[in-house]
Length: 478
Length: 79
Image (cartoon, rainbow over all chains, first blue to last red; front, top):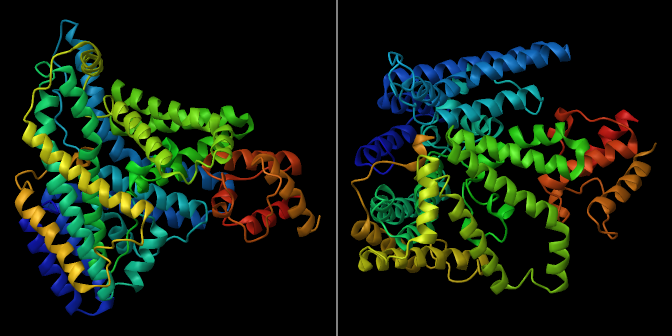
């Protein structure tokens, strides 16, 4: 039951009516029951994983507060951490490891070992595992106190708007909201509807139309010309943005209606002026989680090595980020590309800043847009490895074809024109928000008529151009 | 060492790490207030503070830092 489906809208509407008709003190319990029901619909047995992780981190966090001897506390933290991430590691990497074993044994006489891919990755397991890891680490670091109510921990892990694909939230913020803030707030409800509307547009109109155009090209690279593949790769970041960015807005919107504020996950990423700036705007909740729980410990450990330590930390962090997407060579290369580009930026940072200040480039919109275009193409290029192609051979074949194949474009020009208009619309609105936030307000205009014209235009776009047959989200697979 | 003298010494370290002789810090200063103070330069700063004050931080202590005032308090408990 995905957020864009009719079933979900019915589920959410009935839940909301019941939710606001009961006393505020029971609302979090209703949220827990609906969240377990929602996740159980995917596969009832998957609820056991949510329960297992919830109980582990609930007991673990209480244990940390009982142990006063630092060394024992550290050991118990490591054990609880390993138990918490065990289901993720098992479901995520068992198939890959099994695949490697199969490939190895195919060369040997006997093939009678485990069949391939018998495990299905429980949707969202990465996201709720990351939230669980964040929680126990924060309790271990004495940043927050252990939650004494197991069911509250369960709700934090299973909260249905976030369970399938984030945004990855922090316990500190969520417990307080679940306990004290689940009241009806007109402003939050309106904000929620606005986010849902724009999220539906990004997903159903932008991402799914791009997917109809791009998937056939990616699936038939043998028959597509080099220029066609180049164009497809150049458009692909918009598909992911529409898909995950749209999903995130839907999650934020549905949460907001229920009274829960959830952090934004994307902040106009295509207007980033450097790669490090890009990673502060793209999949923000994941990157901030990675910064706090992976990058910071690594860089702390390597801090005596100066700039070299930071570069090594960046490379290791993005290597882990790549491996998290998938334990394959292309994703390792994707991670390394990000790590290398960020390292180069770190090395040249102070000299770049000096040049920018000297030539007053920091406030030059033209210069900033040029930087954004460069960042966009670096990111697009990296997606050859971190995107639709499965094997390294395919990725290399794609690069070779882009550079060496001179055949002309082979696709519907009208379809492309439609996509370019949609992308231009998104870019125009984001350009306005980025550089002229106070001008031409649409959803937040004080004039009721302009607000409603904006809402109705987006609805019209969704009805006329939305793709309603695709119920898949790219980031569910991670 | 008084809190003020810690702050004076810290100011010099900040000026060196961020390559800006005009930086002025106080207890309420946060990473938002100083250009270039991000996750990349943060650990260079921490390492330099450890070296200058001859102390060692715990990761746990750094995770709970909110502003320069917190930093001064932690340094004071260690010198």
